[in-house]
Image (cartoon, rainbow over all chains, first blue to last red; front, side):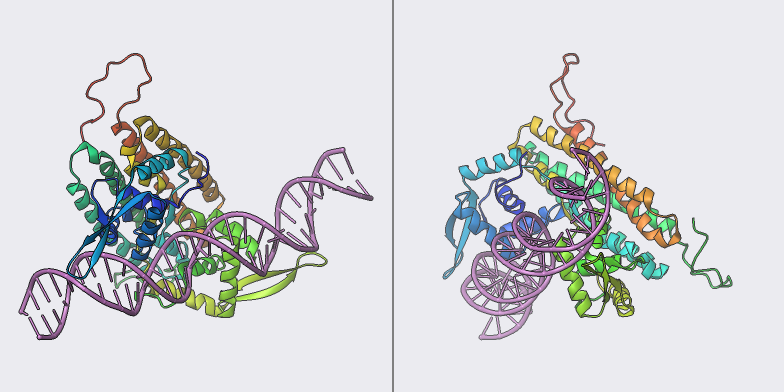
Length: 200
Length: 200
DNA sequence: CTCTACTATTCCTAACCGGAAGACATTCGA
DNA sequence: TCGAATGTCTTCCGGTTAGGAATAGTAGAG
């Protein structure tokens, strides 16, 4: 549980993706990352994937192999080395995971709600709700395609965890929406003390 | 909702902190960020705060004022300018918030659970649970100190949102723990078909 | 045969972090 | 009352990460 003298977590994430069997190119790795890692880590930029692979290869944690992908092109494919697996295990066991880091642009904007009018806040939250639903669908689809195989027990756990996160977000949004001053749609009703409804 | 040609979100976050009234020094701003922003954004490094302030000042979004802080020292305090408020409003209204980004080291490690033995996984999750509780306490304390004043309605919403997030994480962890192969401690109780409880 | 989408990789730049360092200030115990 | 810790305030630096765009071959659609 010491602080890690090793690589950044993203390196290990990439390395970890390679422990699920196949030999992958940087490009494929990116696809994978986009459909799995992105839900609870980052989907590293292409450039970063390649940077990581280069570094991992240098340290002997992955093995590169040139494969030809067409007449005048050669694709590099990577797989974990034994050393890579060992190092990954070491990292998992020895290093302090730290606490999750959340960059939540909606929460950030909600914090500044006093600068907007209620309708805008409402709109933003509703848009987020929709995005959330879409994201949830994507993740559900991915979960559905995870083999029941016990080899994929953990990816499945993580996916379910993600789903429950989206559900909780959904609830949170609803709660805020309910607490917000009611919408003002109706034509009737004289104005006056509108903007600042009875606080609570 | 176009893509933003403006500053990075962190700039606006700093700027936003200045819209809650007082005139603050970079140092104070850091304190604030550490106790609020950090829960749903990042707590920017000191160096970054000062960099942002310089940039914001250059663009006329904040106004700097030299105040003396003792006999032979001068502290620079900042407040939003009218232009700053306008720009912040513009940003809130016009730019696409994007989707939250979660960097969840526990989930990442859980994904790679097949490389660890169950006891280690369990340990990790339990440690996370404890950290979660601590974090929740901190946030609760902050919420308690937010004035009931309607000016602070939004910070309070965000804080409650955060609390609900921690609660949901707590549930998620428990669920995973229950789904994991049982621990081996107790002497009594025969084992059997526990690990895979009825799915929902 | 050309256009578009996909595969594959590299490059450049801005954002960001963390630590070191230097100052003065305040507080509190010896 | 002296001095040591501790707290306020700020800058500088190096390194990493992140994101976007540029490049280029390949395969399939029309």
